Length: 79
Image (tube, rainbow, N blue to C red):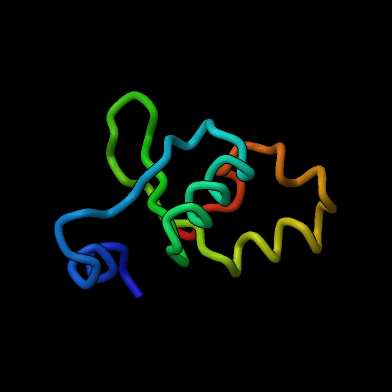
């Protein structure tokens, strides 16, 4: 599924984080807002470069352990 189609389906508001924030911060926002995915934007241009969903969270923990939560979200972006 293309990012544009996800944004179109979500409507005008699509929650995003910058690519340099830790995965844990993105997950905390997803939990607080009860959403299953979050857009990831370039920190200089604010252009959306991909998304991170619950699937990427599970992958991060299963492959990197709990320490994966401290890594930049860009590592786990689905493009």
